[in-house]
Amino acid sequence: MLTPVVVARKSLADYTHIVGRPLIEEIRELAEPLKGARIVHLNATSYGGGVAEILHTLIPLMQDVGLDCEWHVIYGQEEFFQATKVMHNALQGNPQAVSDEQWAVWHQYNEMNARELSRGWDCCVVHDPQPAAIATLEPGKARAWVWRCHIDVSSPNPATMQRLLPYIEPYPASLFHVRDYVPDGLDGGVHIVPPAIDPLASKNMALSRDDAEHICDQIGIDVRRPLLCQVSRFDPWKDPQGVIDAYRIVKERRPEVQLALVGSMASDDPEGWEFYDATVAHAEGDPDIHILNNFNNVGAVEVNAFQSLSDVVIQKSTREGFGLTVSEALWKGRPFVGGAVGGIPLQIQNGKSGFLVSSIEECAARSLEILEDADLGTSLGRYGKQFVRENFLMPRYLRDYLKIFTEVL
Ligand code: UDP
Image (spheres, rainbow, N blue to C red):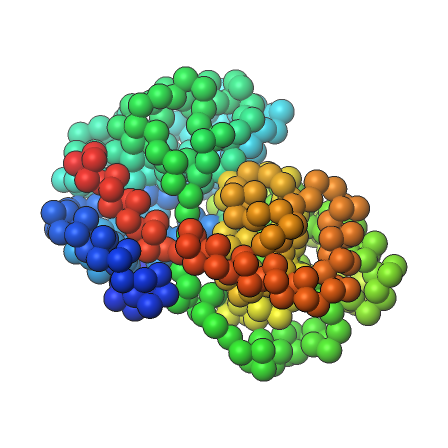
């Protein structure tokens, strides 16, 4: 029932000249005593969204440095994902708390998955709240347990957080993106570790302007006209409808502007399609708004092309755990405008590597400013790329995990 995910092979050596030799050497030294350690990562989906994106690189790199590392996706049906979606939203601050019935469903699926998990792991890394109870239910199945929180839990629904906490406290280590997210009452074993992107994945590899234009042109973008773009799941917290409203303000001044909303649909997100339809309706048939998803063959390379070609990359979230799409855009040297929430300010120094905004009007004004000043866009992009190189590339994240494994084992 737990489904192992097959991952590609990756080699840490390939990253040497991107992140520098000292970091690669540090990783090799940390990995040496951990060789052969049996590590399993558990999460809810193998595609769509940031967690899957990260694990598709992190697991192969853990394998490459000698860990015996696997990734298993937990079993769940509609009722479970409905419950965990409510839980996810509540933990991000939605007033609707998880009902007793939904807690029971969550617990029941955690019991099933805990039973299914095989024995003999040195460390089990549990991602996000969906499988969080497994450590409490079957503590003997791994020598050590790590809980990795990927969501913005800075102002959670208190009732839901209170009920989840007893399942998180037993973990010897828990990881959060920023200090602000650590729940009150959780002390001991807390680590602040932001995630990272893979500069060598097809999503982030350097793409020439010609190639990016060729791809976007085939998808219906007029590559001679300015393009605004947001890449994200169709989720209310990502505010794609607010992006449309901001685009409309920009369009009054720059009628030639186009907007692309590129969004994948994740298997653990039952509300995705409903919200997708609402977003399409919000666009009111404007031919310059392109709403695309992974079912229109918009995969990693296409996302890369949109991020590489856009005149402004937007991430107008109102809650954002980290926002891999931010580092992805900066890595391509693109000017960025995003919500001043969650993990976005961690990646953006306002005015230097992009702009942080708190309203539709501000988002539109900053986008216009960039469209009207090519030099501004170039300097934001250049600074942003260097910042990502120093802070948000996968080898740094791998190193942080190895340190934590060393500690818990
Ligand atoms: N993504 C994608 N295709 C899409 C939309 C998103 O590949 O159509 C990727 C995006 O490039 C990023 C990840 O999904 O790597 C989303 O991660 P993020 O941290 O931004 O948000 P999350 O979905 O985890 O809330």
